[in-house]
Amino acid sequence: MPPGVLRVLFALLLLSLLPLLQAGDLPTMDSASMGNCINAKKLCLDDFTCKVPFLYLETCFPFMASAPQKPENQEGCLEAAQQLQNSSLGNCRCQWRMKNQDICLAVYWTIHSTYGLGNYDLGGSPYKEIVISKPRKFNHLDLLESGSMSQSSPDLCMKSTNLCTLNDRCNKLRLAYGEVCSVARCQPLRCQQELRVFFEQVADNYAHALLFCPCDDGDDVCGARRHNTIAPSCVSPARDPPNCLILWDTCLQDLLCRSRLADFQMHCCRMDPLGNCVGIEPQRCLKAYMGLIGTVMTPNYISNLSADVAVSCSCQGSGNQLEECMRIQESFSRNPCLTKAIKAQMQVHRQLLSKSSPTAISQDSFQSRGDPSYSVHISQDSNLAGRLQPWVPTISLGSLTLVLLLLPVLGHL
Image (tube, rainbow, N blue to C red; front, side, top):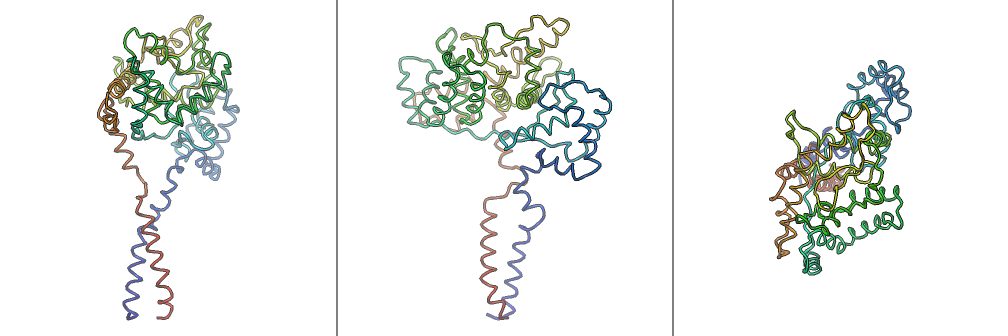
């Protein structure tokens, strides 16, 4: 082959690689961590104008795992927090299941520590926007077996339990929390921990089927099965429930609970003065709701005969803080956004689990019934900024291979 032709081929190969070597492409492989509060803190500490107010703000709230208290120099702390809003820390967030989540949340709440100082509003979620992935369909064989196991009863909560039992992962995780949450072996802290593990690691379709299974009016047996999913006798015994204000302060003392509570406020509690939901996406609200399970603010159904939910606390003895206490309590018990999301999910599972033919249970069934925002999440998932297409590594490897093969030839030109 003439040397001129080889040079042209080599130049074309280099040109084909240039788009992949652009500054905006390769770094996007780590784009998920770029807005991470841990990385943002490192950038801040390398910048003197950011480092000084950040270190000062840390002295305002030296124990980030404690409930926020007004610092002695509140004005100076507010000023430091304001200075950091335009820094690398200003818009940092954490990921739902990230490694070192507690460290990331500690950084976030240092920057946003002024929220919650005698104020119900925690100022927004510390978590990055979560894409609700498309639910997996139930295994058809499991569905058939579950149906045969509950032929004599229309109890859909029993059918949901059977489905979980027949799925290896769901059954293993459920047994893990059942062991430490049983009345005979109740270990409250271990129980809360295992509940968090269950609802974070089990597939959403199984978690939703257990937690939001529909029951006919007056069906006490079905309602009891649904109510006992979260092991209330161990996690939140009804006898002598704590004051909601005390429960709130206890939650704020824990970084994870405080974060999940802030996430719940953002995605389930946005209402206009008339009490109408504003921009609430039901599936995202349910995710935030389930995120609280396993914390001191664990919500549950109020009884076996109701689909209404509440947190196990009361407002007795609240004194002049009764209004604030009621607001905390009613963010669950009188929350139209949450109620709507739960009822919509129950309707989805009533239609799915009542079907006689398992082949009718498909991913399309999940999408076409219930939550209109579901398809929005799917479209967001397919268009996430900075996501590398699966063919990019293939092209890169192929081009690089060709270049390496041509190098010996080019060396003799």
